[in-house]
Length: 283
Ligand code: AMP
Image 1 (cartoon, rainbow, N blue to C red):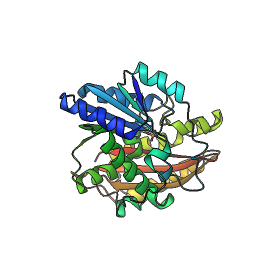
Image 2: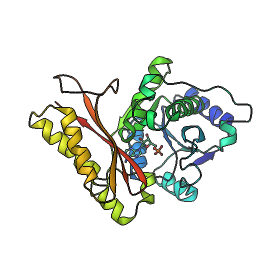
Image 3: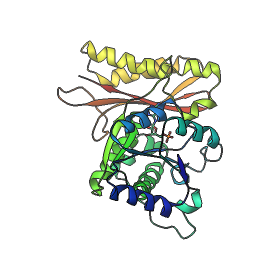
């Protein structure tokens, strides 16, 4: 595996790979690699001849009171995991090469970027859209793999690719979970073992919703309120939001209509750690 830190060098390599008719798959991460990231690499490997993994803790998607400086950066461990996963190129720039001093241009997401996570984290999705676009231009992939774990981010990236006519195929990968149902995340290291156990309530909420809907209970706000109550009555946990949305626009949904796709979004705290999770809802 070759480690590249300079955008121009990565672009030159990607250009050469394309000229040699290599199918390039990219997986974008903030590092602290875990099973979720590795599943994306595995999925990329199914179709791509060359895999580029990016590791970049993107400052522009963190709010001023968020964990940018504490975010885990176990780089050597990440290199070992990426090598074992047979990544071909690891692109790991420093912040100054992605956002040099005179940097000015950013992308602005529309309404989709202002709901749910966007409302709680103002500017977050503009930062995501900007860095994803930059990384796509730097790595020139045919296909990019993103996890359903960040479902709103995935919807925004699909919108971005369509709106800006980006020539890349976006593929989504299912959520990888721990044994108790907790979605694997780099931020789970902030959880104590008690909080980690309690945090499985988010997944239990998703299972509860799927069961209700399978039993033809279609009152989505009432189900969301039940899940909020489940979280509230779990020691150490409190809900931030629980909402059903339609899969495309992420508009709040009141009921389930046949033939439409929905998703349950949950954001909740276990202790002081904010977690997000989601599940597809099939009518
Ligand atoms: P991050 O490093 O947290 O920015 O995540 C990088 C990519 O990995 C994103 O596309 C995430 O959605 C995806 N990802 C993170 N956690 C998981 C998980 N538990 N299962 C599947 N994909 C994940």
